[in-house]
Length: 347
Ligand code: KG4
Ligand code: ZN
Image (tube, rainbow, N blue to C red; front, side):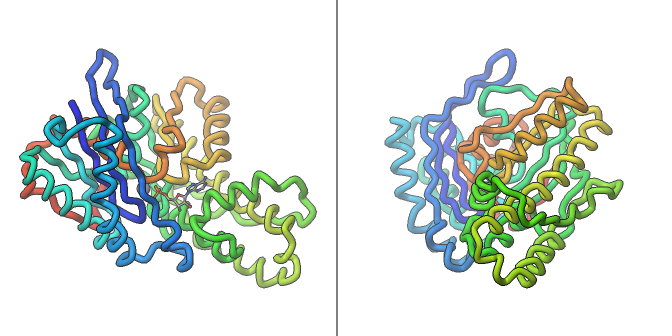
């Protein structure tokens, strides 16, 4: 089956074409093209994504992305069997561009179409490399908009057992980077600075919010405020590259510690057979390494799945793969049925 995926929930316009072939142990996904047009340059000067600017850029880029995806995959509209488009959660002006474009294609080309939950797609991106989830599974979804620990009994059966009460992990990286004048998006820059930190001259210590709480919830806004106070107290040091590197390292460690501790606790409590790490922040090397090491020590039989870095951040290949996995249980495949929903819940 050939599936066209469309992603416009935030600031990346994504169009992908994949081939899905069922096999005994799962599904073989072959990515034929995976085009991502990033808007980072546009939003950089605002230190975050501006919804209406994102929509304008999606509108401009979506058709050229489709052309490129078709060309790269050597496919034509007649070869497409199914369209999957992100319908939420996300920024409504951005979502509307993708869902309406998808609807128009489905109508014009007479194709089946299904609306996809962006968070579910982040989780299922872990399957693109041909892996098979053993249940129950725990998924840690960490992105710019979400931080959730999800208990999965099967594909399509999700229970959020913990989530952030304020900022998402990616948002926290982005806000800290903004405070340090490092640019946007913050995650990759903070992690690069952290890697470069070879000294511990300033002995910086940041809080690990809610690490001792018995529940699986998170809170990252206090961490950002702690960094703000630190920058106000260190007006001279902040100009020094080593201080920035040490601070980046400590901020990253604080986030990684809390995310690791709570996730492994959930793995143990729910006797998870698989742990999935996904979402943009899953591109973070320290977080990948920390979860893997702690899992090996504390629950060595649990399998650890994390998508390749290119499939962690927003992309349409994960939307196409999810469309395939959800297609059989989805009865509403008419272009008339798909609707954007900014607050779409995982269900
Ligand atoms: O999943 P994603 O591409 O978009 C949303 O659905 O939000 O996630 C984007 C987020 C941004 O906040 C970005 O700073 C963060 O993922 N991110 C990272 C890394 N790469 C991207 N955070 C930490 N370390 C990284 N290497
Ligand atoms: Zn995302």
